[in-house]
Image (tube, rainbow, N blue to C red; front, side, top):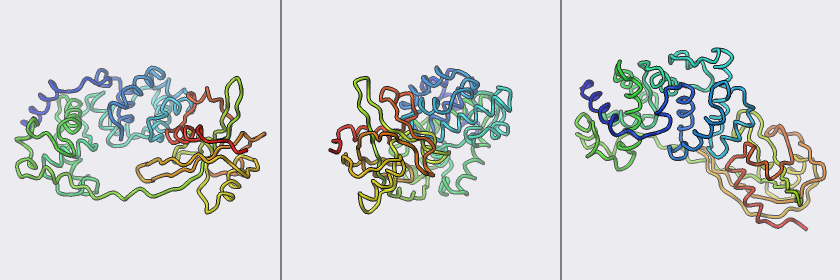
Length: 360
């Protein structure tokens, strides 16, 4: 069965695969970049970011040498910003610890910050033709149906079964094409809902198809609902005939939105006066009233954020107060926002505040 499965899927991939920019290269850096960008992000969204990123940082050394602020700015809008920070750290490791030469085996790749088991298998097999397995969400779904895996594919037993099978299936020849074929099948044919079984090249070997289990597999334990998180954002502006400025704070560390710039925020309180006082301490100003711009909602994988947006004139001499969340505060020209790492959430807040009245 394994040999027939390999022949059928590789033949299908050769004639049906999509023409994607990262499939036109064997450069391990470019392949690594594509794999990181594609995590939890649609192909259509990734392509323009990938092309712009490679134009700005054509080599791993160029990425390593770039300021993190610039990297985050070019990543802005793609989401999951820890990926950009991990890329930057990984590039520095390749430059400094590997002499700029990308590691070629899964074991060596796993020593690069930010590279896990899946990415190591992808880069090793696609760029270096190493016989290395990989399992992502698409591959997990394909293998769970092909072999009727009844365990939760996110759980320890399900993951162990998937990686064991993936390792057994990787051929000696063209392992990169094989791994991409599995991913392509999951992305285009073996869909989560309404899989296209009638045109699947390996349906004859699929246990789920034979046993009528396609709609039941893969098994997935329900995810916890995102927790609510209420915050208040302060949009402080200064207008000028030469262009206005807005007060932005940079999030500290490697946590949520780390390194990104946003209007300063505090957790919501029971009363507006308390919120204004907290915001005032954060930006070194006394704030007693603010224009109300309503609220925006931003949903992350584990949190549902609701942010009340307030608008005030720029304080005379803003300065960052004591904060565990932020490490810098700066009045940024509106024309310079594109050169900063500004998250989609921050852009929502700024857009909402733009329509709000300033307090009299």
